[in-house]
Length: 400
Image (cartoon, rainbow, N blue to C red; front, side, top):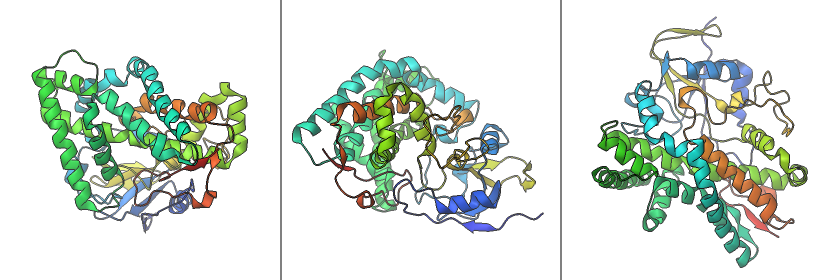
């Protein structure tokens, strides 16, 4: 059997929580297909079945380490990873880098932050309720909250938080073109370089991320260049919560039965969050590629050494062999082994933090906002992010 044809996968601006129709077709065509994305060169293998996705991301024969030196076909127009980026590091470097920031993202680190995060969220909600309806839930709460929390965890001084927020916005939503994105990245990384340098000279015993990195550089565990490369994606990652939670609240407002159930049965909320995390379309297309370090046979396909391979966690979360009736949101689904935070060595560093923030935001929506909080415009008029790597509403206009 010859290799499957190469399918072009355009960057689609999809609305609401619609599942990507191209990905749907690719899933039907077979467990391993070939795709070409809008940027970069050539084609890549795409793996969509749950079992295969987990196998590939845990298999050291597939590595992200060579990707920065290659022009792999990709969704993002601007691709300039830094040395030290956790995303492209493999063992043993990956473990060494991750260890430097692990205390901040541990269960203890995240729980220490929960109370402060709740206070910051209450402040945002109080302001919105005081000003009265209508209000944009993204602009008033979902946008500023994760950025404020990650800045707190990072140790970004209050005076610099607004600038940081602007850089992150420019990088994640590159609607202003590659030059603006590149400039925002350069400015953000230059800021981190200065901060880490200052904290390396005087590490102190702070538990914020910049202090931990300064101490790790001072101790010789990681280089200054690695510290800077490591910290950027961590800062940017906080923004995913805005979009993921925006998708969830949109669903709860457009499917009132789901919302009612979460109000009436608060004890099912942790399980319901897992189901919402499984169901929502977190991103556009696919994330970061891996490269085969040797020839590998997968589902009857020969993946040659040097070939690029993508996995789709979105597709894995809809695999009917693992999630019966995957198009249905089922708050009683159990077990629910979704891979929304990834799997294997590159499992999301900030998963516990993101989960904590989403719990607080969903509780806020269900318990703190007036019961009749609803969309202020027809559902089809909610604006969705365009040219975005991470999918979500640009605004969520609500009234009560």
